[in-house]
Amino acid sequence: MLNPDKYGIGPTDLKQAGREPNQEINLRSTEEILEAAMALDDRPLTAPRAALQRVVGNCRDYALLLTAMLRHQGIPARVRSGVARYFFPGETRLVDHFICEWWNEAAGRWQRTDPQLDTLQRRVLNLSFDPVDLPPGQFLDAGESCRELESGAVEPGKIGIFDFHGWPYVRYKLVSDMACLNRVEVLAWEGWGVCSEVEADPLPAETGALFAHMAELLTASTKVASRFAEVRALWDTHPKLQFPANYRPHYWELPALK
Image (cartoon, rainbow, N blue to C red; front, side):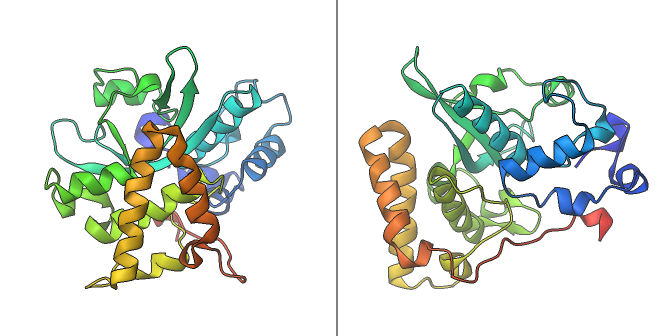
């Protein structure tokens, strides 16, 4: 959500201009976002747009669009769902976030890029690194998030978003990250299947084993290419990861506009 104090525009301005921010932030696919952008301003997408002519979005949307642009150029890329540690400098706090991960052919590795961080945000956060090439540990994918929480490196109340944190949050992110790696344009707040069990205490043994397997696969597949096939196979075959026949994306409202 745009911060009126920093950018000179906020949700109220959008509403007064006849926009529907709650609908825009729930656009699920790249196609829908681009259609909305062209409806606001039908010039080429490379043309700079005033703030009021831009589509409302969040970190997932930045990651999704950069992934689409890189793929259009023939560069392997994917969205990753996890947490970032750089939004609260000096604190051990991991906040819900999405970034783009793309294959750097010259370096022979997956490079992580945060396309949301503009000049203003970099300055406010006083970043000591280039967000185009995130250093290890600055963004943690869902599997890495599990290891961080399991090791005690972060307190349960310091990983998540809003009032959703700790193990229920991290389990949910495992499903979200699996979806991203399987080309699902998943919204940041939607869930299905095994997501209904993330808060179970204790977890059923079968469900706990599934979460543990997902965590291991997500971390390993970034480092060992051959493990990626296992990510795809698990997603395609496990009944608790499949979309229900009547599934519809969840809807979320900007708090200030409810």
